[in-house]
Image (cartoon, rainbow, N blue to C red):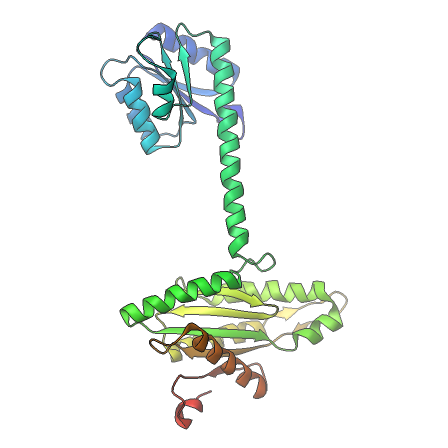
Length: 315
């Protein structure tokens, strides 16, 4: 439903000019925005150009009938439909509702009754939309981290499984980054958890700004984050990781009452080895990240599935 009466658009379809004009004038007088046409064909043409919240249509129309029009409207749009008929013996309420109509009115229509029915349809429409928005919000909360607005760890495992399957199927490279904020516990202890949360939010924003369209970022837990880089080989992933690392290092954080503080990140990167288990892939990224920690932090370490000294030495 629209935010106000004036924004609520009603379309009237009736070949009786007297009924059509009377309804049109009355609905506009009440405060809704209304248009009126004399045939189903005109209605469909107009609906191809404009959106309407509710269509009020007679069943008996010159060429295409109101029930057929209702079917087409429900198939192609989200508009509600109120069906009118003077032939109550030939058409049933159940028939109209079963094809998607929201209400059924017998002619001659009392304008006050029509308005009550229109308001009820609009109210039910708003309640339905509110339920949809609520379900979308709940779905979003189920897959995203409330603080950083990045995807959460549940989403990470689901997406990584899909990307591994795609990598195996099409032989495309796939790289995983594991990122851990350096000395984050000390930061929290010194400046407080609210300031620590600001770092998490700021770093999440930095990650998103450094990624490409197909990449995805996740809050893995606490101060740990992951990034999935589809169709990306190891050295290209190292470039992405360095871009994230440098961006965070260049970002000043200003705890309340303190001078600017620099925060750094340790990143582990690894390329997927075809057919290996998901847990092995993640574990190797974790090992690469801890290598960055051991080697002084604020760096990117690349660890390959090949365990030879030559490959293992690439950091």
